Every structure is written in structure tokens, then in C-alpha cells.
Image (cartoon, rainbow, N blue to C red; front, side, top):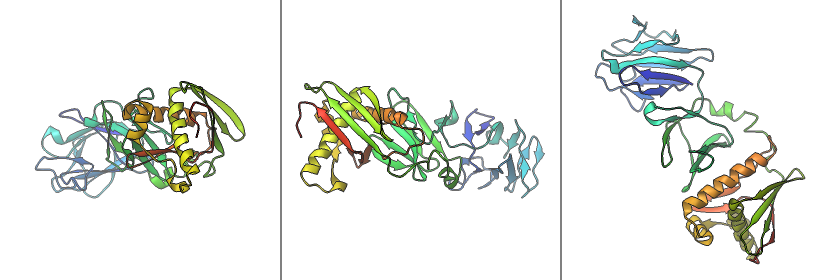
Length: 312
């Protein structure tokens, strides 16, 4: 991940594969407000081997004190000082010149970046997850309590204590060819087997994948899943069309479970994390829990429910 750090205030910006500096916000990833800076002052790009810079301005750009020739790409050396105006607020130091990477970069450019895994990224951490960032069908997605949305370069991702900027550091077409992202059949042969105690206080889950059963033990989040499974089962018995089966408002689900919606969301993330890690490494899986406009439902998994006080 390549990072330019401002000489005046120390803030950092992470370079995209093609990165523009200048005054025009609609055209530049890093906006400079100094009056002697051009609308698009300079471009920096990754040429698959090194970072290079080209001047696009009227007043000029210097690299380590030497003015760059207009229209000619010049390789950036490590630690280079790039000046795009008179004041120090227009001077940037090449702190890091590693290849571009898709990541979450902390707001204000202070702190460590989060390099993204294609399958799952629970934030702020796996113990108290509030959002999940993952790659699905050629796009990066953000899942949160309100639903799921596409991530585009520059989107702000927030949790209760942190804010990041989504930095798209690679080509989506090449990412979609990654063997992790496009590894397995579209519909994995995975089923869920729940066992619920008579008093409904204990729920264990076994995952059957490729004919092999894996016990996931007893967890609180398994009861959230079995509750969603029961809603889907009830709808099927009522003759509801498959595409409409199982949907329930997150608020209603939280009332059924006797907890806050935010806690339900945490349980869903924890369940996804456990099941994802239990699946064979290159096995694709349908979404465990689907979301739309404040509603959720169990994904398209075959399931069995044994025991429990509730009878469907």
C-alpha cells in the first residue's frame, strides 16, 4: 500500500492505481486548496512495477527540488518529496511505495489500514462485530444492521468507534478471477442440523458439507439461526412462495429473542463467521442470512430441527 504523507500536518493519503492531486474535488482523490494549485495538478500511477508521477499543472511540480517535465512520466523514488505549490501544505512525502491494495484506510489518514480479505472482514473486531465487508459476485459489499450495500472507491465505513475510507486498490475484473472468490459451484451442498433443548435454553448446531458432519457446538447465536429457520419453515407450511419465505423484520426478531436489534446483528455476524470458517476452504456458500430493507431471513440452506418446546 503506497502512502503519501503531508509535510505540514502529517496526514496521509493512500494512493489508488491512478491517483490525482489538485483543486477539483470531482476529479481528484486528494484535494489541495492552495490557490496556486491547478484543478488537476499532478497524476501518480502504478505501472505494474513502480509508482510514477506526471505534472499536469500550469505552475509546475517538483520532485526532490527538481521541476518535472510536463507530460512525461517519472519514476518516484522511496522517500521522495513532491511539491505542488508554494506552501508546505502542498508538499507530500512518499512514505511507502508498495503496490496498491484494496483496504480500509482510517479517516484523517492516521492509524493502520485494514487490508481486506475477500471472504469476510468483521469490524471493529470479531468479538463485537458491527459491520462486515466482503467480496461477492464481482463487487465489494458492506453489511450492517440496516442492510447490505455496494462499496465504491471512497465510501465511508463507520462503526461506533471508528471511521474508514474504502480504498479500491485493484481492478474488480482481476479480483473476480481470484481463486478464492470464484472457487466452487454456485450452490454448495451444505445443510444445517439444529438440536434444541426442551426448555429452549440450549441450541447446538452441526454443519453437513460434502457429506461430512462437523459439530459447531452450543452457541447463543445458534438460537438466532434456529428462530429464523422456524420462520422459514412456518411460511413453507402456509404455502408462501419460496422467494418470500422466511422474511422477518429485525425489530420483530429482536422482540422474539428478547434482546436489542444491535445484539441480534452481532449474533448473526458471529454465526456467519463460525460457519464460514467451518466450511472447506474452497467451497462457496450461499448467504447464511439474507437482508433487505430492515428485514432478514435464513439463507437457502436445507435444515433440520430436532427437539425444542416449539412445534412448527
